[in-house]
Image 1 (tube, rainbow, N blue to C red):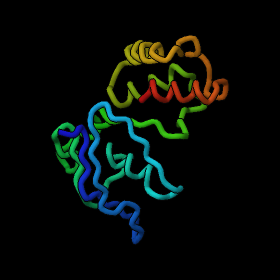
Image 2: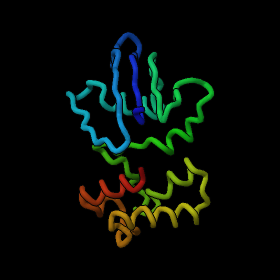
Image 3: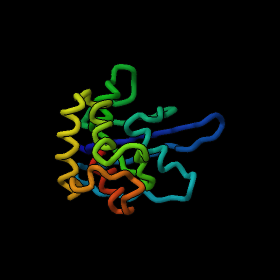
Image 4: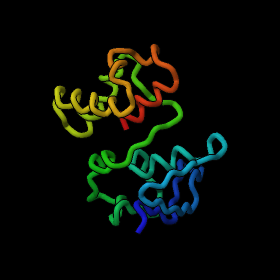
Amino acid sequence: MALIQVRDLVKKFGDQTVLSNINLDLQEGDVRVLMGASGSGKSTLLRCLNRLVEPTSGSIVFRGKEVLGPGVDVKELRKQIGFVFQQFALYSHLNVLDNVALGLRKLQGMSKLEAKERALHELSHFDMTSHQDKYPAQLSGGQKQRVAIARA
């Protein structure tokens, strides 16, 4: 069984159809590249997967459970499905450690101390703990990407 199954997914913004009958199976461990022209719906599809954007119709199944519908714990879903977009969306007024810890506090309800400890652990996987006090403007593109992945 696929980790994520997308069936007949449609997303409309007003009269404009952005996604039309998308079908996709992703297995655990898959690495996929989603390519297309600007405005073709790549980001919209990804945002539908963790319900940052609500699809107009269709089905998304994650680990055997339908994720569209009123009974789904969206906060819990977003803990399990995260993305790193080309623009890393780091908060310029927060240092590296606080950028990673913020999501842990908001999405997982961790205390400030717990979130910082976990953030340091995640940053250590990417050899970024020595940069924990730097701000995004002080980082290279590759370093920003590693921070964004640690945060995801």
